[in-house]
Image (cartoon, rainbow, N blue to C red):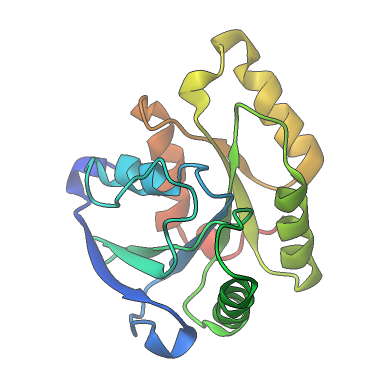
Length: 199
């Protein structure tokens, strides 16, 4: 299956704090899990071929709501608050965690979770913790390695193999600068297999 991103028109739909506020769309939904500043907004913008669709920020932890993006009525991407950034009160952190767990466990539209890993660095402790939580509930998940444009070309394959060794399952590279990685990701999102990929 080939996917031409020119035919995908992505748009922001709504922000929600908790499950009861999430939009009702009968579309496969792909929530983005990742550390703050891993490049979730750049990932959305790259797939949408729209530099300003999702707001990017140099300030970690700015996304505090679940932001929904509709890709041509084919699938939804849900941008979740990043983990691993604690410049908020403990009470706020606990509230976010409760709301996000409820969303991830009870949202029927979710097809496959997408965990983003920064290709410039080793996998971090909170990345492993997030993965363990997902696997404990036996949720379908794939991994996308971001910021591959910062990785020297002769080391790119080693980075992907390292993540595959640590996490298993489907691992796909991504670059916000070089869109050559987009097609494989879009194909997966738009295919029936996207709903059944297991780690």
